[in-house]
Length: 75
Image (cartoon, rainbow, N blue to C red; front, side):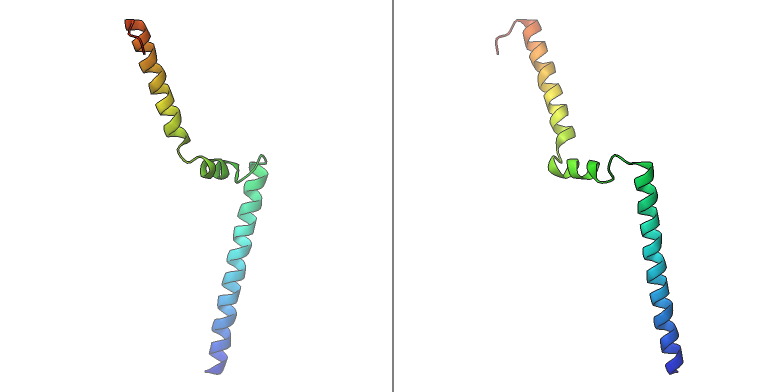
């Protein structure tokens, strides 16, 4: 009975170690395929999470201004 407990602990440790090695290898492969920076996109999105929405609103504002100037309406 006591021997089975050690086998379970060793099996869990082996699984955790193999899982971590797999994660590390995956990270290394990804860095090789994308050398400019793995986290650059994530960091830029964290710094400005509404960038896409801001760009869309700016484009909409520009279109409205163009329509107003075409109609001759003052702003």
